[in-house]
Image: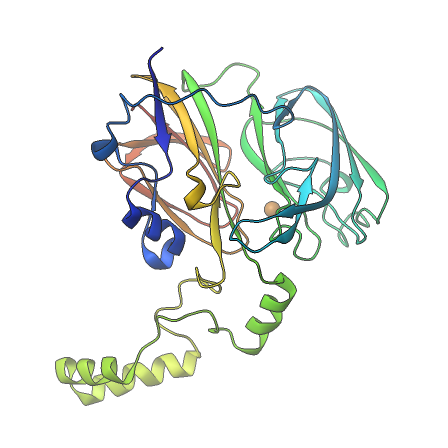
Length: 334
Ligand SMILES: [Cu+2]
């Protein structure tokens, strides 16, 4: 069988870039040239029972999960023992029931991001529902009135940061506008071994704590030599007045984060399979708490066909930037 693999990255340089996230450059999905990925052979993935749930009845259990992404053991928040949470496949027009049980010692919730539904089904504690208490079950029931790629996540404290996020794919009643032979969900997120509550308190005290790309005295002298003293001083005063760094790209950087692709670290090398010359639909979801990603696949054009679940006029790009909670569907023909 002629199988090929789409890898997260291959070159150690790319890996380092991915680890660094936006501040460091780009997220790289494989290297077509170096690895000849249209020809490389890869084994079929082991069957992964429970990773995808479909139908109209869903049972989701929120619980703690022991993980080790960095060599340091930690406790994540998972659904049915999974991080990311299971992919939910719905069909436009179906009435669905989702029983969500909270096995944590703390209150929890699930918010269906971007889904049009009655207010009390939205899952945002304090707005239209009280959250799901420890040991309790909440039954969400609603009709699916849209199609496309979406996602779900906890809306309680920092449970999203610790892993409670998962993809939703809704099949359109009248079929997909853009045909594809195969598809993969690519959910981007980040993991930290630090307690997110502690990160939050740290940022409250010093917002640039995790930013190491700050201006130095050397930069000041270089700028002064190039632009003159007065413009340089004016520039620094302006940033000082705004209490910001010009290099402030992300509140929390790779210093505290390990970036994940479908719950796999860069070293874990997430792989999506395809056959030669297939049209592959990649559903990119940014399920991170506060990271932007620049996504490209070296040597391959990306045709964006949907944004945040909505079909768009196809746009072909080499690279796109995906912000927190954004979703882009792209077609690639490797
Ligand atoms: Cu959301």
